[in-house]
Length: 339
Image 1 (tube, rainbow, N blue to C red):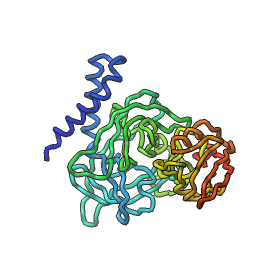
Image 2 (cartoon, one colour):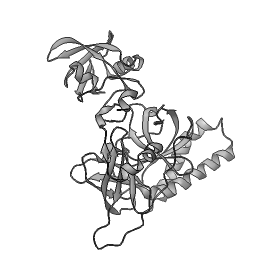
Image 3 (cartoon, rainbow, N blue to C red):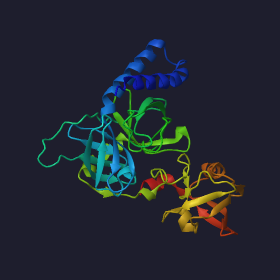
Image 4 (cartoon, one colour):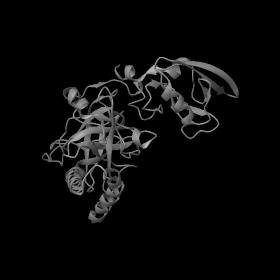
């Protein structure tokens, strides 16, 4: 199958979206130069952007190979609970990788392609890890991954965006469009270095969070040696299964049904999080928060965005047809992240 027309079409579509926003700040020659850099990055990165599929469950995500002997960076929640993962390459090849270490709190993990007994070690396509500390807001970045899971009929889609925020602890927020399956995939600078790994896909396009490359460098030896530590449930920010607004510092700590109407339905309450500790239970319907009616998820997200960490918020809740009030002391997202 000739994928070149598909890739060219992707470039055209992406640049048609990006150029209007940049045209006031960049000359035509600068735009042409940027286009050339994007093509160069994609050409080298695409073969190394692999899908990771759990052997014992349908869970899947993305990883990026960063050494010729098959070392892979990905997100901890992608490999959680797995000892081995199937590695699927864009050209149709496959391999098997052993899960190494993971810092679950930072959602950072490593895996390594294993060579079957009797076979000679292969040299895998790879890209170099970079550093994230020099990045600035508005810097242009390139996201790749396998949205929706591996699809042999198309290469990993390329998304171009900007860094919209750098958190105090270095985590990156971009407006690159991501969906399920992209988790664990690479975020590149225009020099083709991996400067982040997709972690939490936000409810809004500008809320996608990425584990910074510097976090991997800091814990490199421990991850490579197979150390596992931290908890995915310690913080909303690094756990994409939990639905608190990642822009809010005050954390409720519950998985919420974003599509519920007539109140916000609670899907899950991880232990040791504010919601569970206050007595909130799965199936509860949050009718109001802090005196503000919450007929939908956006209403509750708005209350949390304006709340302060450690603030007590009264939730009016319907449970099994009866209404009750639950006082929840919101947690500080930064404090949770440092556990």
